[in-house]
Image (cartoon, helix red, strand yellow):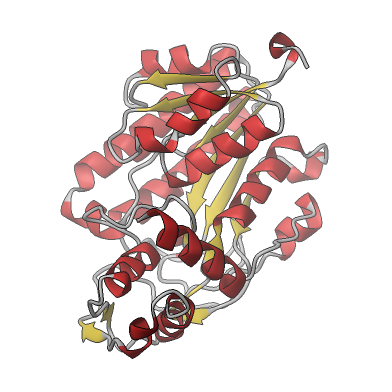
Amino acid sequence: MNSENKQRVLVTGGAGFIGSNLCEHLLAHDYNVTCLDNFSTGKIENLLPLLNEYPNNFKLVVGDIRCLSDCQKAIEGAEYVLHEAALGSVPRSIKDPGTTNAVNIDGFLNMLIAARDAGVKRFMYAASSSTYGDSKSLPKVEDVIGRPLSPYAITKYVNELYADVFARTYNMECIGLRYFNVFGRRQDPFGAYAAVIPLFVKKLMAHESPMINGDGEYSRDFTYIDNVVQMNMLAMTTTNPEAVNQVYNTAFGERTTLNQLVDYLKEFLSEFDSEIANIEVTHGPNRLGDIPHSLACIDKAKKLLHYNPKYSMRDGLKEAVKWYWENI
């Protein structure tokens, strides 16, 4: 297909973990892609192979979603937006709520305004399971939420409220995807706020003891990156009018404790280094703002988007461990 005739998709935060995987998938499936990133957490290394392989179909805009003109520049010519740009991490938001608010709310609003003014067909955005807050019900169903437990959770809930208002007020199509503990290739193990899986992998590979917050019986619905890519593509391409202007759990629908997670990591990593099987874990205090248990009901996504996640937690973890072994 001629480059001019391909559909253009803007991926904000495209240099990050999830964003770069979305860019890669879109380019491999014949879309034109624009990436907007300010590299505060994203990495140019995630994009270099794509810039080299798809010089005519991939455009990088270095800019900040807190600047409306940057959003307007990046969205030019785009038919769809996959909005991944955000400051993640509950601990980071507790330490610096102001910056988290500026990026995740002001930046989100800028992107909605830019998308409205550019007349994009559909706006998909990264929502978060943190929105469930102190709700005790399991599994988590989209229309039953509690009070947010962190500044980060507040920002992600406000995103959903803004998207809903823009959909109703300006006749936009918006779809929110509540991500549940996404993991996989390119998730950074080195940052100050590294997620638990890459952090534990890095520790175990270095023969160091990973530290579990609490007794290790907190549980999460760990979700492999390829399931998340599938959900984004289904949300972007669905022709079901009922599926639009909704929020969906984006998960596998299976619960794993932190103790089980460490056991799996040791099992898979010891295939590369047998000494890892003998490494003991340490335990620290529970972390402020953490939800004890997280498990998604994915029936809504299955029904309205025909979502069918391909990777269980164990299958995805095996793939991720192999990637980390070869790349860090």
